[in-house]
Image (cartoon, rainbow, N blue to C red):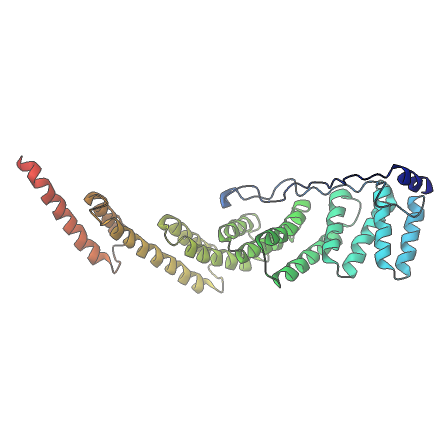
Length: 341
């Protein structure tokens, strides 16, 4: 250790310390149809020896582990975490490194350092897989992710903050894709999408849960979230009758899939609201085209015909029939001079 410090004194000159550049951790795909969890989550860099940082106080992994444990026993837990971390950096391939990393996760969790505890859990999953009991680490990682979400939700959220909260759950899913609690984590992700008004992405996540985990314990909540997202998305797509029809069909499908859902009557009401929204926008579209100075008579007539085919019993049907008849007559009259010639 003394030799290392001596070398540092001789070699230290003003230099720029290069920070590792992490690749962006984000969803792949631009649209809900392309939404998927990326196969390679944010790179969890390996802890390596450093001449400047993380210098152990002892000369072997065993001695450093004993030293860190003594600090912990004396209640100096922050110093103990640092000593454990130095061990992992210096002697990563030793059995003591696993013990030290587990201690880092345990101490940070016990002292409510959610981000540090979560990072320590993820490091274990990334670099010590198969060498420890998985379930406790996964449970703790979820608990820390929940705590981070609760802390952020108590403040004003920015989009990048919401992305980070979702990424916390996505990493856990990446490392344990067959864990029974995956549907629960996916539901948390969907709920975060709804909070960020990304309803189409929430719909996609819920759809994945229904397809892959159709008998999960969270199914009732998943269907609720799914239909809620559909209804909220309808307000964002209220001028797109094609998309409104799709959302209407999604809620109808959810009602068929889960007919005993306790909120099925609410879902039916939302489906009706989207139907009425689609009906009214369709009529507005027809009246929009009913402007001979900007559009052809035939375009307006076809818009009214389309409305009547789709909504024959609508309250606006009589008005549409009247305008269609008037447009037909107008078109007929406009052709008469040409016929006479």
